[in-house]
Image (cartoon, rainbow, N blue to C red; front, side):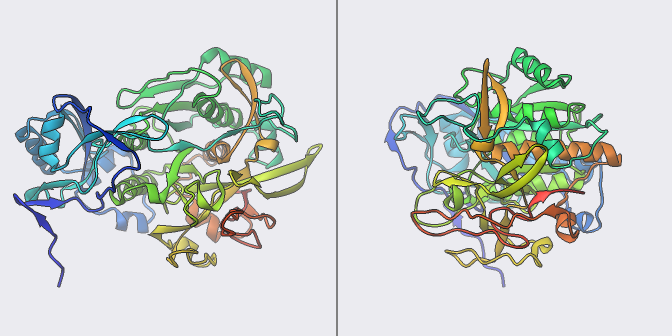
Length: 518
């Protein structure tokens, strides 16, 4: 017998997974109840997609919206609920299963039974936050699966690192060896005689921007025709370049790596605010984009699983699940701070979104070459805060495709979870990528570079095969020799002595290794 869901006063029920602890910041009473904010309400699917996935079906975005998106009836109920609470409807999208509403803080608080206030963190950043649960009327129970945007704190970090000289200054050439992305494409034996023609690579960005003159100079210097690069605004965010030591480094790295590997592909950059809502909206916008139709999406932003609510982990994962049915490959960086993912609580953590079972988690290596030959490739681990992420999820169960991969239990919780990463590629800043950012030539590394590298590879494969690769994880785990194994190195955090070692076969720092064929 199922336990009845706990109800709150006034016939309200909790939204599953919406619980938030008090922010690690100081509350400041500066939030005006008459101020306005927009939020995204995630609505249930009209029917499950599991059987279609089991059969390996692929459908169009339009077909998905009609068959598996939110129903007209549920959308209408959510809109009526919002209107009853004096909230205006900004947008409703069946495919994205999203209703965006806007209203006064006081009305949002009443509608979702929350208390909102401003907080200031130890860096002086002021954000709107909450603690406790989000609640909805009992008649909305099950219809509303998540509510995003009540809290607008900065949520994710870009996973890139600029190579520096001994004096700590930016370096235009790493102390070791550095590569152009097309050199890496050749070293890794990516498909030749294809350019990603007629493919679209989507890139998710939560800050920063790009300048076309920089892109023109960069690709001209490589002797490559500049690819088509387009910016899409999500939730009011725009292409906003500033300086080289900002998030511009992430944006330019992503575009230049993907573009140099697959110059024939078009690149669409989805700019969104760095919030839980913004990140989710950018992901669903890219996955369900019926105009640009990206066949592969690169994500180089993330945070440790512990920093997300259950509703976030679930809603994002369900979006990635939809992508697999649409034939869209998702590549995400595994993190740059070793096995603790920059949490610092003495435990191991994996980075999300790379820990989603429907995402290609991208770990990092240190690559050494002589001429045009690889002489060695080991797990990237230079220091406590310069090492590949990886480990075992404490939220997502071990997927079927990893059941023979000998994924260990999570070190601290003993949870039988999804192992991260799946693949790896060059990421050490000291063997990093030559890029151009805001007029400066830099060398940048991090697993942020591996996600667009893999996205470029997928675009090449898609052109070569004449069809989208889609959800590749089951295939690469089932295909012997799909990856070149990385067997040396680790991502063990020196302070705790916890983490994972590379070895024969899959491991929780380099995955299956460097993807060599599909």
